[in-house]
Image (cartoon, rainbow, N blue to C red; front, side, top):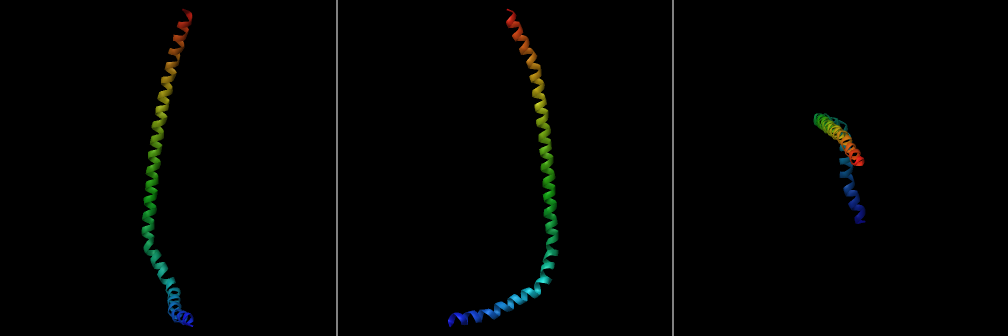
Length: 93
């Protein structure tokens, strides 16, 4: 019987708390949401700014890499005829 008595003793206070939460939730939740909206907007703005900055950095790095690749290809194109000319000279002898 002690288990049943403990259950009924804690039932009413818990039920009243539950009813209070149900009645106050429609008032409190929108107020909290309104208060958090500026915080969320600031976080979203920060995320967008970081994303834009990272995209810019990646684009710059890509351009530098493209320039480097073009430079190396140009050097390789200059080196190939020199090497071919040297092979032809060595074959003639």
